[in-house]
Image (tube, rainbow, N blue to C red; front, side, top):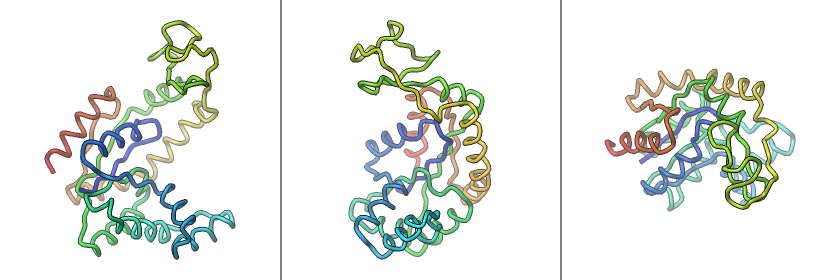
Length: 216
C-alpha cells in the first residue's frame, strides 16, 4: 500500500502519520530524513545532494526522486510506505508517478486533510509547550488545570515557537495552497484522491482515514 498524506502545517499530519503506520505496517518516508541519510551514507545521489546543500542551493526534484527511488528498494518498504510532505508540486507528483510506474507500483490513496484556514491559524498561534517535559497546551482549547503550572510535571516554564505567529502561519498556508492546488485534480483524475475533515478532533480524523484505507 502506498499512501500520500496532504495537509497544511498544523493540520496534524504527524500524529495521523504515526497512527497510519502503526495500524497498517507502513514505513513513513520523510524527504528530509531520507536526504540526510543518503548524504551520511555517501550514496551516489547523496553525494550530488551534498554538493547542492554545501553551496546553499535547494536540492533539485531529480535528486529527491533519486533518493526516494533508492529508499523504496529497501526491505522495510516491501509492505508499503507513507509519503508525508512529498510531493509538494505538480512536477514532483508527475516525477513520482513515473518512478512508481517504472517499478510496477502505484499510489493507492492520496488523503487530503482539508482545513478551515482561519480556524487553523487560531489552532497554531495558540499552542505552546512545557519547557521541561514538552507537554502540549493551547491558549483556549487545552489550558493547564492550574494556570501557569504543567499538568504533567509541575513546571512553570513554557515555550512558544517563534514561527507560531499569525503573519508567518498565514504565509505558510498561502504557500501550501498555491503548491498543492494543482495536485488535487491530478490525483482526482487518477481516482485516488480522498478528502477528509482535518478540523475534526484527532480520533475522528483517524477514523476517517481508517475508513478510507480499509476500502483499498
